[in-house]
Image (tube, rainbow, N blue to C red; front, side, top):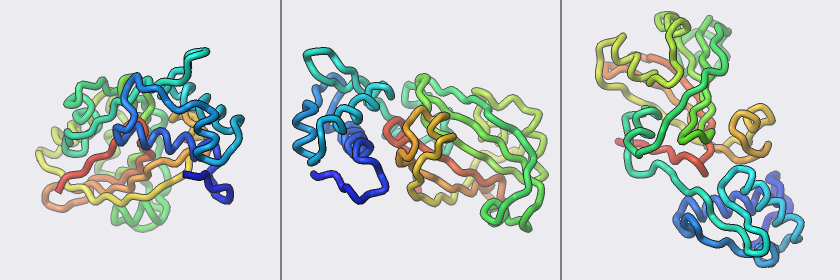
Length: 239
């Protein structure tokens, strides 16, 4: 597989993404030795300097470890895969035997843009509550999430959401035990700010999920956007 020199993705990140994909697919397991810098350079048609940069980034992200004189080895390939917990990151992690963590970055009232307004069924520029959260699994940054709420849920600004399930809080408040999810998927390249929060390089491809969350009767609860490091967290849906 040759790297694409005219791609918007830097050459070293193409190699990085390829290795992550092989780890995710199970081609490389924990402890497996990776090809050498020279072998990767020949495979991708790039310089050894480029492959070294890719491996150094993988090591910084703690996906591999490098042993001097021995080579590079897969250090971490743990992804939630089989268990789906009804849209709850917290419950999905727990059911996969992982430790979830949530850090609240910002809580603010903003004027909704056209995308948020459309998701919530509001007029443009209406006041909404925006909660930005960083989701971690086993102390590793996985998801940068922004949740947008209409006026009936402004009380959430006063609720402690760190390390608590937002869906669980809404379950208790509304008295319903079933939510519906409309998900839309695409790829976004990490901005400098997103890369800082997610501990990755700028321009790293992220899975972007735009989601409308509804009650079992179809009423809109909130709209959110998730930017996911798919090398650390696998998004699951159920129908």
